[in-house]
Length: 317
Image (cartoon, rainbow, N blue to C red; front, side, top):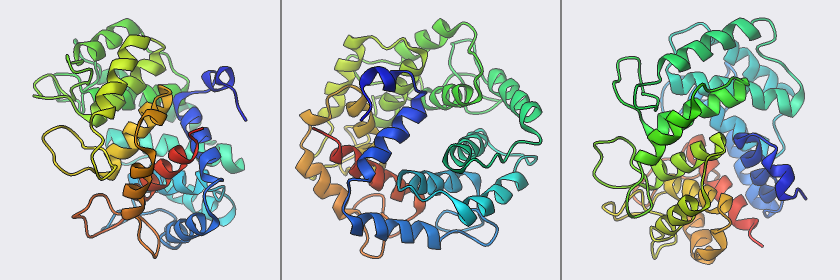
C-alpha cells in the first residue's frame, strides 16, 4: 500500500488512477467481469470507442481506456488497436477536450503496456498542443473553453492544468490562475463554473479543488469548507446533486464529489452505504452504467464514473 508521501509525489491523474486501481481490484469478481466485458465488447473495428451513437471519438475512447486500466486489462490487442485509432486523430481539428483525451489515452497506454503511440511525432505535436493551451489563458488568469472565449472557465482551467502536467510543461505565473480559481469561490464553500453563474456546483467545485491541488496552492481551510459543501449535496438516495436547484442526484456528480472528498480525507463522513446503494441502482445487469434515475441509456463514460465511485467507496478504511 502507498503512503501519503508517495501519493504526493505522483501527478494528479496518476494518483487518482492508482487509488481507483487499488479499490477496483477489491471489488467482487462479478462486478469486475461484468463491466470489463461491457467495455471490451464495445471497442469498434477502428480501435476506438463511441458514445451512445455516432463514430469513435477520443473523448469516449479515453473513458473506455480508464475503465480497462483500473481493471488491469489495458494490454495486448486492445491497446494496439486503440493506438492505431489515436494516430488517426492527431492531425484533425479536435476540440480541446478531445486533445486532452488523446494525450491522456496515450499516457495510459504507455504506462500500462509500454506502447508509445506518439513516439514518431511526440515532441513537435506536444509543443504545438502546449502553445494552444497557453493561447487559451485569459486576463483573469483562467483558461477559456475556446479561442473566442473572453473569460476563464473553472472546468477548462482544470483540464488545461491536467494537460500541462501530463505534458510536463510549466504554467507561467501560476499564482494568477490560483487567484482566478479562488475568485470563483462562494460563501457556501463551493465554486462557480463561470463568473456569471448564480450558484456553486459539485463539478466546478471538484474541478477547482483539483486545479488548486495541481498548483500545490490548495489551503486546508479552503478544502475543508469545500468538503462540507459537497457533503451537504448528498441526497437521501445516496448520490450527489450537481447543485442545490437540481433535485435528482447523478453519477457524474457522485463520482467527482467522491474524488474530492477522498482527496480531503472526508469521504468517510458521507453516508457510504447509501452511496453504494445509489451507484448500484445505476448499474445494468448486462454491464455498464446509466447516468441518473431517468436516464434510459448507458455508455463507457458513465461506466467509468460507476466503477470509479465503487472503487473509492471500497477504499474507505
